[in-house]
Amino acid sequence: MKNILTLFICLSFSFTSCQTKKTTSKQEAIINAEAIEVPMENGLAKAYFASGCFWCVEAIYESVNGVTEVINGYAGGHTDSPTYQLSNTGRTGHAEAVEVYYDPRIVSFSTLLDVYFGSQNITQVNGQGPDRGSQYRSIVFYQNEAQKGAILNKIKELKKELQINVAAEVYPFLKFWQGEDYHQDYERLHPNNSYVKNVSIPRLLKFKRKFPQLLK
Image 1 (tube, rainbow, N blue to C red):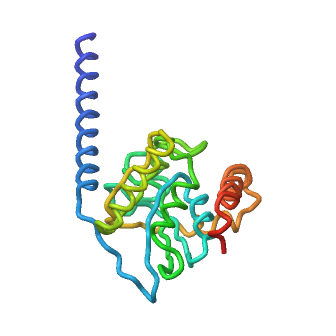
Image 2: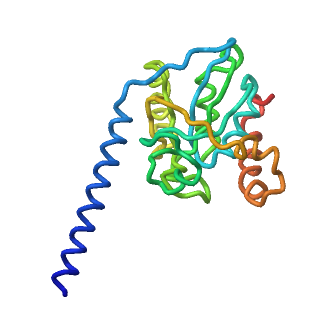
């Protein structure tokens, strides 16, 4: 009986190890892929960021002058058509992310990076605030080499200036999956939600105090 149990454990471990290797391989392929550049539409560009709960990040970017719209969704993973339930398992590779529509004549990508790094705990790995797990990890997505260079330079500057490790991962942009309708404009539509009151709004107010010159 002990031998059978040992065999079962070994087979289970081998299967789990195999699945982990497959997932890791898929994520490595994504990280090493060639970025896709999203064309401008009606004078607006798009940028993609992940830094914890997308309700929080959406509200922050929508407060920035030059940003016209923010969509909540998922990016950075290896599965198609991710959902909130699936991404929350941490097995899809996706993180909660936002798609930011902005007017580059008013706000630059560099400034959006300042907003990104200035509105989160940049040292927290696989999470932001009370939200923990790979689905809440920080990722900055680049669409071309100029953006990649700007991101890496910003991280280098922060490390040197603050003498800290920056947790944000840097990914080529491949695809953004729009999230469910009920996640859009969540903070604005649900101001009395306990999470919104205790986490989202304080994070937004902290950002506003730090960057008053960037607000609408």
